[in-house]
Structure formats: structure tokens, C-alpha cells
Length: 409
Image 1: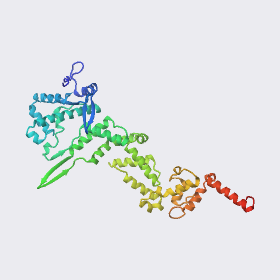
Image 2 (image 1 turned 90 degrees about the vertical axis):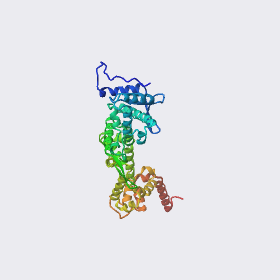
Image 3 (image 1 turned 180 degrees about the horizontal axis):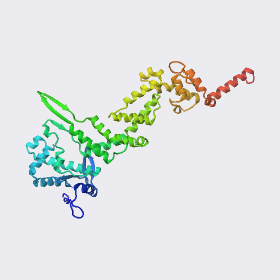
């Protein structure tokens, strides 16, 4: 049985506005009945604890009830009989709202009419859930709800417009924030995104006309980049007010790209700070393009050529500064008997080898340092005297002297 429609009255019996009491009513219905939101085959539905789908009906006052699909269909039909136009008027409004196809409307297909009431009940339930989740007051009568879905009819049968529900918009912006920064948007940000999306979708219409046998399509529907830009528009202010450490620690895509950009810069001998890397990623977000870091990576390669002009030709051929530095790093590690991982491309000796400069920064010619000169440079490090190689060489030198003067056998 459908739950009995509650009178919209205050505690003292006085009439109160829908906006004042709806949120608490919806919360009471959802929490007391233990309703839950479930993704079933890519479609979001409301379910009771037993797993049965829950639907909702609204009337032209905006009052609502939850119930089974049979309850909700009966409720809509009963309400229609008390409304001007009756059941046929409801069927016409469902057609205008794209719940019934033109063919099924003209043939008065009863199965299609029943399916339309089912889908209407599902959509209303989802919107009520969204109101509960977003703390947005529910004050939508049935006529307004259907009118909001009546897109394309007044612009001819060849006009198409997409309209995203609040529930789907909330899920999309939640997913975007989690992917980008690792935390969810606020309720105000969810509302901001839905308002921006609604306004954009009102202006985005695809019209199809025919020229002989050819279909001519004027396409202004929102594409992936348009949607990304709307989401980014909501996200950007958060980036200014949130500590950098929190953003980087969030594990979202922005943090990942900051790390990726720093690592890429390092391979080209550029010591990019977290702040600088984040600034470049944020700039890309302003352009609505975060699919990859190719533009920033190109800038880093240009910076690298400026820092290492003697390596510019190799960099243009796809050779990284790290690739060029690796033989010197291995040579220094072997000479000083150090772990290779302890020596980076930014090591002072490695930088001198890459730029072919001496300890005073004086250039010794084009190209990189020769391995014989780099060996001498590494051996001049005080730590070399404590290596096994240095000690063995010292013993050998002493032994040679002893033989020379006849002191040793």
C-alpha cells in the first residue's frame, strides 16, 4: 500500500510553506524507511531494505508519496482524474515530457502509458533523493517537473536537447572532485554545478533538417570538453583556498599530475618545486584540458635546452638529460663506492660533467665532460680516500716503493 499522504500542516495545525517543511519530511521518509540508493545496471534506483524498487508520486501542489510501482501508478491516475484534462491530459503531458513516443501517443498504447508512469515515478524518486542529499528544498509541482523535461517538442520533431537530472549531476560532480582532488564537493558546489549545467543545456540544441536525401545536422549539444569546463569552473575556487599539502596528499588526479610533472622535469635536469608544478597543472585546468601533460612537458624540454645548451640537439632527438647523466652517475657511484640511487642528476659533480665545466663553473668546451676528466673529478672527492680502491692503490704504491728500495720481498 502507498503510504498515506501527510497533510502539510505545522505542529500547531497552522499551514506552513512547502520549503520550510519538505527537507525534514524527505529525510524522515528516507531514513525511517531505510531507503538506499543503488546502481543497478548503470541506472540509479531507490530501494527498500528488501531490495524492492521504490517510486514516488507528486501532485500539482508539490506534495509527494513514496510507494511501489503499482501504488504510484494508481496515485497518478487518481490525481489526474481530479485535474482538468483528466487521464488524457496526463498522457499528453507525459508525451510532451518525452516519456511517451509520438507513435505510442497517437496509437494510445496502454503499455507505453504504463511504462511512462513507471519512469516518471522513478525520476521523481531520484529527484527527491537528490533534494535530501543536497539539502535543496523540494517545491516542485508535477506540472513544473514535467515541463522541465518537455524539451524539443516546441521546436519541431527534429530538435534534440539533453537535460541532466539533479541526481546525475550530483554524482558527476562528486566523481569529478574525487578524481581531481580526492575530496567531495560541498553542497553549495553541487548546486552551483547543477545550475550551470541546466543553463548550458537549455542553450544546447541539436537540430536536424533534410536537404533532399541528406540529413543536415546543426550540433550544439554539450561535448566532453564543455562538461569538463563547467566542472572545472566549480572546482577552481577550491584550489585557491585549500592548502597545497592537502591537495597533494589527496591522491586525486591533480596531485598525481603534480608528481608526474615533477618527475618528468627531473629527467630533464629541471628541479621543479611542488608549488611550480601545481601552478602549471592549475593553468592547464583553466584551459579545460587535463587529459595529459604534453603541453607542460614541451615547456620543460624547452627550459632544459636553455639550462643545458650543449645538450639541445640531443634533447630535440628525444634523449633526456637523465639518460645522458646515467653513465656519469654510475661512474661516480663506482669510484666512491656509493649506492647509485644516492646520486641524482642534480649532484654538483654530475652537473659539472653534463655542462662540461670545472669546479669554478668555467666551461671546458662543447659537449659533455670526457670520462677521463670526470674520473679525476670524482677521485678529488675527499670520500675517495676511504674507499677500498684508494686503500688498495695505496698498499700497491707502498709495495712498489718497497721493492724499488729493496725493503720488501
